Amino acid sequence: MSTPTTDARRVGANRSTPCPAWCKFSEAQHEEYDKGEPWLHGSESNGFFTFWQLDGGPITATLDESVGDNVDLTIDRLRELAQASLRAVEWIEAHQ
Ligand SMILES: [Zn+2]
Image 1 (tube, helix red, strand yellow):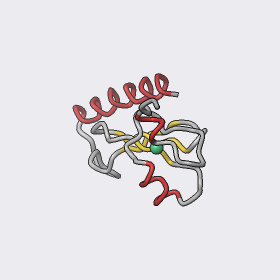
Image 2 (image 1 turned 60 degrees about the horizontal axis):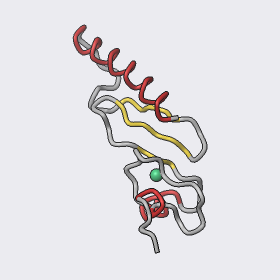
Image 3 (image 1 turned 30 degrees about the vertical axis):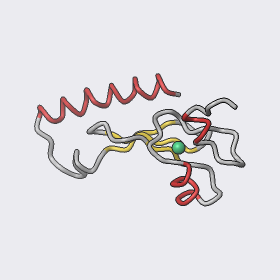
């Protein structure tokens, strides 16, 4: 009997689609949170963004609350956000 891969272990008994490698949730967490619905995969935050993907859907990015919501950004912070946004686009393109 072969040892299952990490992703294979994370495929639920009635699922054929594994979590993407970047998903932070366990199968048990998906079964608890998603309750028979398509799984919503989520990444760890990279300090600016958290990435999400509903089974079969596009990968999207949510701006972290720590970056701010309706706040004024200094030019340095705005430059960091712009650079992080470009890196987020490149990360999504590399993982879709
Ligand atoms: Zn997942």
